[in-house]
Image (cartoon, rainbow, N blue to C red; front, side, top):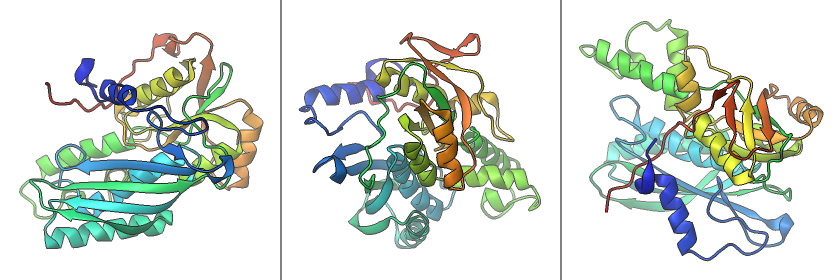
Length: 327
C-alpha cells in the first residue's frame, strides 16, 4: 500500500475536489460505480477500470484470454457491489497484436456470456504494452443502489466467501513458473495435473468471479453498504467504514484453503463482496431464496468512527494501492 500524496486514493480525493459535486440523488466519484440519471427508479450504474500489463497481470503467468476475462469481470464486480447487474460494455485495447487480440476477445466473449453483459463497441490503439480498458453500464432494476457510505452502527458485517485465493494463486503460479522453468507450456499446465488445490488457486487468479447474484441477494436482504474486495479486505473495509462514518470490529477472517492469513487480509483481487446489514434473518432469507450459499458473518459496525479491530488487535488498512509518478 502506498502512502502520502502520491497514492491512488489521495489522488482520487484531489480529483473529486476539482470536479463539481453530484446533483442530489446521484453518486459520482467515491464508490464502486457511479449512480446517474432519471428518477430513483431509472438510475443507471456506470463503472470503468483498466488492466495493465506488468501491473495487473504478467503474460508469462496468464493467457491473453484470461486478461480479457479479467478486464470485464472486474468491472462487473463494481456493478455487483452496488447491488446491480451489468448491461453493456465498451472495450478499448492498447498494444495487442493480431493473435493476442483474438485470444483476448475469446476471454472477453466468455465473460460477456457468463455475466450477460454484451460488448457493444470500443477502440483499438497501438502502444508499448497491453492495456485493456472497459466501461460497463448496469441497472438496479428500480431498487436503490447499495452505496458504501450508508452502514450504521450495530449493523452486522458479512463477506460472500473465503478470501485469499487470488493472491495465493499468483504465489503458486510464480513458484511453479520458477521451479519448472525448463518445461514448455504455460505454468498452470506444468507439473502434476492432479493437483486440484493448485488448479483452484491458479483459476482464482486467472479468472476471478464477480458475485452478481450475491450482490442482488445482499440488496434484497437489506444491505446498508457494500464494497467488493478488490484491493484487500483490510483496505476495502476501511473504505466502507470511513465513507459510512462507523468503526468496524471483526471476529474472524475466512481464509480460503491454500491461502495465508496475510493473503486473506491484504492480497486483494478476490472480488468477494463485503456488506453491512441490520437484519440477519432478512439476509439469510434473501440468500436462501436465491439458492446461494449463506454469506459469512465476520463482525459488526460500531459507533467509534476510527476503531478498526480484528479481535483484540488492530485491523490494519493493508492492501493494494497504486502509486502515482512523483511530480
